[in-house]
Image (cartoon, rainbow, N blue to C red):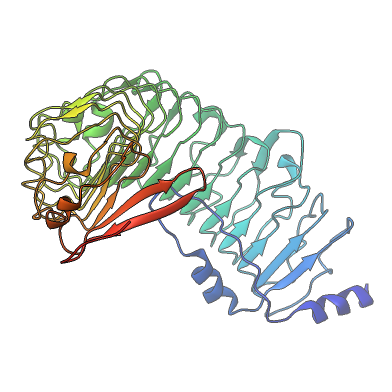
Length: 448
């Protein structure tokens, strides 16, 4: 034992091994590296084990050590194994072989703030029981740990927990989690589980909720996902489920919502009216559904709208007239054949427009009159045969025009006087050799 302890003390050096702990939604960026650096001050005891070792309370003894990472083949940790590291604040036991029912067998940790138990190399799924209190724990990563149920006989084993990653497990409903465990949570990731029904009542402090890649079919309190009481929620992602119905009341009360993602579902209709009371909504993502129109009849404050990979065939007059704040609009990979001249007449703030991979052969005269801020336009993968089908005036504000993968056969030399100064046009000149060229407009002639 003495030689083993000596090896441990030698291994203590200025080494920080860090991996992101929790994936939270799509736009919340939590700088864990900064958090870990602040806690560990670039000093972490890191052990890479090639065979199983029996750890006990005398294996690691240090009154000052704050950060420990143990990787390899450890199947379990005995109760009290870290009791002689009283100042421990960061513990990384990821990528071991700890069974779900042994995840918390090390017991009480008085000062640990970050606990990483993700990616356990086990092939069985079990109930995980938490029998100790972790009074200072803020970040808990249980991603891909084989968990079917997370239970505790205690009132609240995590009194300060804010960030919890339970993605890539086998959780199917609220019954899989202890009701009283998670009242302080602000960020919860339950993506890639088997959830079809779940109630989030009594989780009223949530700011971010990720439920991507589950089996959810309905968004309503009576039979599906109950979001009642999540009035503080800022980020909600339900991408790649089987959702075909959304109860308007599920979203209407989320007055602080900034980001909403329903990509990859089975929506043939979307009631935009339910968002009229959500004044803070900034980004709405509806990619990869079956929407064929955009029935927006109430003003919305969103700055980014993504409708890629739907069934939209045309854009009528005033399609987006109630979206005065829009800066980015994504309509790629639809079936759009025509756009009426006034479709974008109220998009005075629009900066980026993505219309690539549709069936457009022309844009109507005056299509861009109101979009004085438009700097980026992607028309790649359409049916344009002439640049004159897009550029009608030198007043076009676009600086970057993507025109790749269109059946463009030649460029009329007289067009140079219409191409705005400082516009770059990106073209496929030789697709077979994968060469790419561009036209940069200038005051004089241009070359390909």
